[in-house]
Image 1 (tube, rainbow, N blue to C red):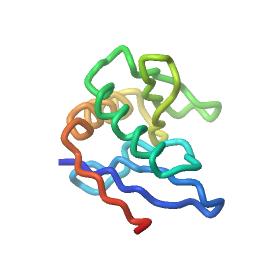
Image 2 (image 1 turned 180 degrees about the vertical axis):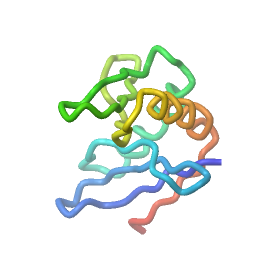
Image 3 (image 1 turned 90 degrees about the horizontal axis):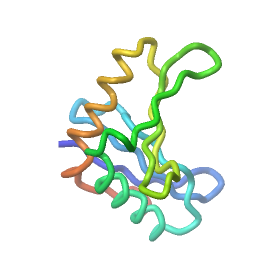
Image 4 (image 1 turned 45 degrees about the vertical axis):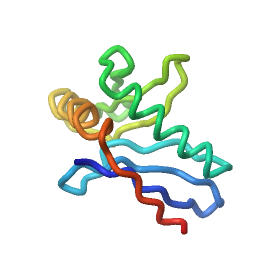
Length: 110
């Protein structure tokens, strides 16, 4: 199972990373001013992760592939790492679909 890891950025915003069972980060959140908002973001990822239409598949300016996971209202709730191939990006999406729904939450800010 995957894990959501909550950390604090240098600007005191909270963020989460979704890590796959191999420990690799597969999704990173935006920064949140309040920890409660960060937890809501995690719940949104869990609720939206299995819906393929929520994934916005993109190509960065440097030609690498990535994706955004969006909530039902269209707001981005997580962004992937950069991948060298389209196939690798698609595997990243499948990993989020498999890991997010049952992932435990570990708060490293306590």
